[in-house]
Length: 461
Ligand code: FAD
Image 1 (cartoon, protein in one colour):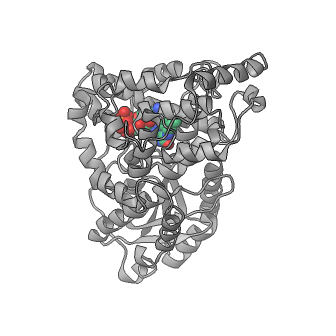
Image 2 (image 1 turned 90 degrees about the vertical axis):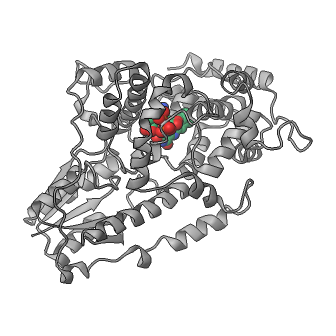
């Protein structure tokens, strides 16, 4: 019997409930779709780069087991049933996802498959606590992180990771021929287009070079980072806010694409002890859970202020300032260092994300959506929940967010978290030199303007 594993954000063989179920049911075929769903954004450029390499990696590993990875584009409600018919598959398995428009597609497909006599099963492989399993005593979603995290810690502990399937068997040759491989699929044309569109930006025209140097997309790269966790967690508490150090796990893109399960990361951190480092690290994993919890209940998190009073806020529109921010040419060292790290590597240290976010939405008073969209395109870990959630947190427009009036001073932040200027010097090579641009805003005056603008909406509901 042929069982289809619909590969989504679970590009791994370890601890993959959908793959385990398919392997148990029969001969496995894997399929990944480039989907177009109303209300869901296309992945950004950096995510596409990652996905391409991660799929290549997964495809090669599956080939070792004689399992084809079919790559196709289109509407899953059309393509999956078509594939079922072509291959004679009797079952389809996938891991659940949590953004409402996607859930609706999955629910309709599941019911259509079942109606036509095909087994269709979904599992939980992306989150430790699926959003509907955590609720307040009155059955409402959580709006405050600390209460949410407490509820998670007091609920059933995350299941232990399941490891690899005991046996993985592919379908007979005749069925395998229905597959297409990466070589005949879409992506190169798209990547070329993205590359061309980015040619004019600073640091380097080959934007993917820095990504290649920094990352190894795919399950093997994820497992290497996982093996580094012991060293990272030893000093995590002390080093995690120092952008010049490799003080955090760098697991975010691997978790984003499901190359490692959060269960495995959680349990690995438990094995490393109950000390402060692992404890703080697990709290960070719960921020990821919380972001998904919020997105599940607020599907338009990326486009609407959670606090509606900000609908009337006096955001500025200034294309030139936005461009300077994107390109790391604001004249503020820590901001420019962060934006250049992002452009070069597809990642930015969390402390610096907070600072560049505050600078954009407060000192420049540009809408957080501009920042969110830029991060969406350039981050390798950009995800549908964490990115808008954190942007609304920084901007003060979200629930339980840093209040708008808390404005980071990027110079003080740099003195505090990069006192030896290592991070800033690494990314802003011209720092202190004649080529250095002057600051595009006065930090004090722009802070006062932001606070005045906030005063005008503060009292409104
Ligand atoms: P570690 O410190 O090692 O943390 C372990 C894991 O916990 C991370 O891999 C991540 O999965 C999770 N995590 C940590 N902090 C957060 C957080 N604040 N929110 C959600 N999850 C968290 N993270 C993303 O994964 N995707 C995004 O698109 C994203 N956008 C952000 C935008 C802004 C404006 C800000 C301020 C933060 C954003 N973050 C995002 C959160 C955070 O910056 C990254 O998760 C973190 O820097 C990733 O590095 P790491 O894996 O070394 O983290």
